[in-house]
Image (cartoon, rainbow, N blue to C red; front, side):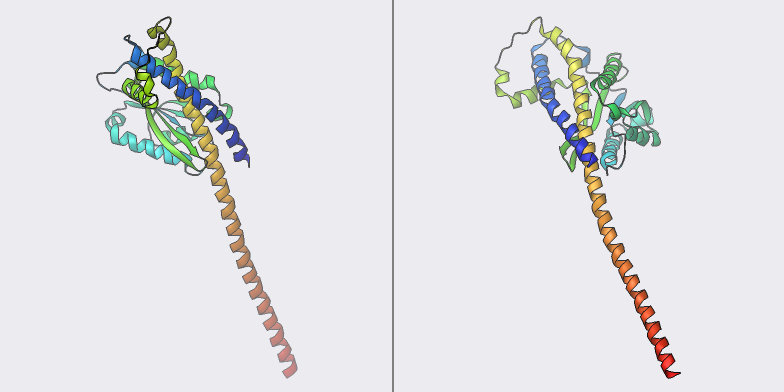
Length: 274
């Protein structure tokens, strides 16, 4: 019941932010396709020297395989694509949530930052602070590629495990996705004031923060849904266990009563014969 109440609130925050995140992506895609200027956040490194992963978990347990299923996907992805980076200490992880930090620290990954208790007071400012630091590190060429790993809310009992690249911003995929969603965008000519480059310089940081914020909201809603399903399964299992134990108790009690009756009958027969 507690998880269900929290789920309604988390789901409302998540769904109310989805249109903003989608529209922001659309606007950025059109700006990127219209600008000739360069932006540090669009920098494509000649070679990938160091990688950063932002892993979004939970602060509390009792939510089934919510955390482990995601972390296993992340580990599999990293070992498949970045095993040499792990071996050479060129892969860092920022963990959001207590469970995320504990999991990757136990497996001796390089933890750049930990944010335990993040979901105790989930707010936009903390999320923006994390992404501002990440953008600064990317601009300073401390990292050449940045990923976000999180559980995307699908249904109350199901989540999609997502590992997506956020930096450098994939310009081609943005433009292609925008054209697929709105065929008229390819022929519409927009006029931007004061200039496309200046607007893009302002919007790109907001766009990246909105990506992390949406990932955090999706993860929070998914966690509450997973916890509700896990607690429901636990309740059903407890009821089944109670029925099994009650049956065994009744059988043992019946056996004891039968034994007592047999002893009484045997004693009575012995007295009569005596």
